[in-house]
Length: 271
View (tube, rainbow, N blue to C red):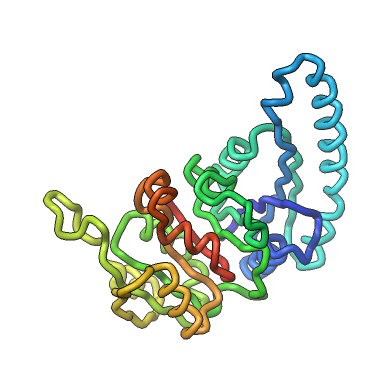
């Protein structure tokens, strides 16, 4: 893990996303690119008289954001990490997806403490769908200091889960303990369904020892997963995200949506 992009919501080294990113950067000797995006508000350009006001506001915010470069570099230097600061303007999702193109991992903090924060069409999930690299979603209420010591993997043999595990490999190889919850895929048994991917031999060939637990909860998958993580004292969950369409998840609920709203642990996800 050599390149980590960090979406910075606030210039505070104690903010959960920044704190976790600095810890990972120090552990792996990775280069940390801190990214602050000054969002464009399309609605502000509908009225001609609002264009000048919005332009001045964005220019002022961008200047302030660029002024935080020293703060970021100093925060990285204190952890012995090579740091770069990016302050850009535009649509946050487009900017994040573009800057993440060569990153091994994107760290994004989700404002879980804000009940009005969107889940299905929020910045985090939209950035994941926009083609950003695998993502470590850190809830702003996260208390974990060193994620990746005890890792739980939610495995169903699907492509999304495989991408998440592959991104998590550097963490898994250094973890003290790894547990795999083995569940069924939604299309399992259907005609022309692709075969489930074999995780156990893949991990063994890469030196990762894990224990495997069958996972078939009778109730809500998301809440059962959090209960299993708590019982295992996990400090990180690895899983595929949005295994079905976001519209279906928004209408019916779903595991990704539930965990984004309720997990206090960092979630390493991929789509």
